[in-house]
Image (tube, rainbow, N blue to C red; front, side, top):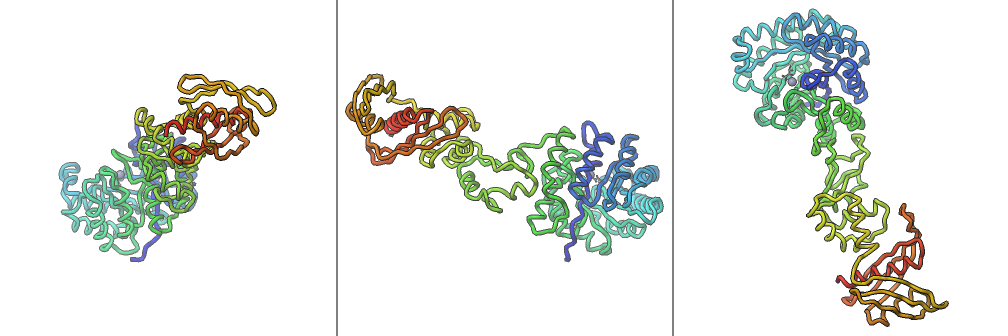
Length: 503
Ligand code: KIV
Ligand code: ZN
């Protein structure tokens, strides 16, 4: 089958609107419509003009402002009054379309319409003939088999009827899964049957509701089975669990190598506006647009995400966020399931120096905290870093450093509450302090130190990084931050002693 470019037909302003607790007025519909134009959809069902004067007015307004290349369609039941209303409302559009429908499932014909199949077929054909005559040569007629997804038992009747509907003037045949009751494959099999039976110049459309959460799958697979017009709604708005979500279909097709005729980078911005205007919140876990759609919380996922964050394809994301205009990065949330990589990234991103060894050392402390309070905020992680890297409260406590002469200092400190006051000289204050600590009988095998100027948005402007050899042979890194370099050195020494003490 030669694949044709998909035709995105938006139903937010009709099916979506009819499901809102407060349907949109003309002004509100115009805002959404402008976003649809920016997204680049090929067709818009602007409303159900027979529903109310407000909807009639909105349909006329959108038909007036519509760009010439967009199909503007209005919904009408298979009755002449509705069809005339649509024709009047969308008359200003360059590409007007009347969309009429009737149910053809055995259940609906019997219990809702109370009509025989022959009566329904006649109504469908007459409605299409009337719509065609009313819209004239410059417009089109779309016919929908409402409850098509429930037509397994009478599919031959449906196909025969559609052949007559096509002869009557419909050029677009829409196959709705009005209520999603079973698996997508069963629906797609029906779509294939209709596609095979109808002339190839007829556009096959699908319109899937999301009752079981598989509308995207049914729509995407229907495209590969011959459906060209994909009826979707922004944010998946629509009756009950909604209609097919346009963003998911667009990205699934894009990722499958289909040339998708939409400005995908407008998706995220549009989603936020639609949520705001519809008062329908975006679910945390909503695919692509949910606040959590780019969040990683398990250590394994965080590790993979970080290793691939600058690549086109990410280890744990379906698209690069910029494809849909998302500016936020993949988010790392620290929970009891997370690990050192997240600590490292969160602290480094906040502008603080940290090594992966330090991140490894403090990860268990952060995990224990997260077990108690749930996901840690960046502030919580920084506090843990401060308390366990920069200002460690442990057995050793520094009290005072007095300069006695050029090369001599008096160091006052305590260990487990016992106070020491030692005078010692050395090659500079660091050397003298280390010697004083050793003189007091403590192991303090100092290896090296470096100093860095800092800009961490606090008073601290100097950072000392010290390396010690712990009694178990491990090399320990400790840090100290202060406005004064000497104080930064002292803090680093005592932080180091306290880290060694915990090993
Ligand atoms: O869900 C449906 O069947 C419809 C039709 C009116 C197309 O919305
Ligand atoms: Zn619908």
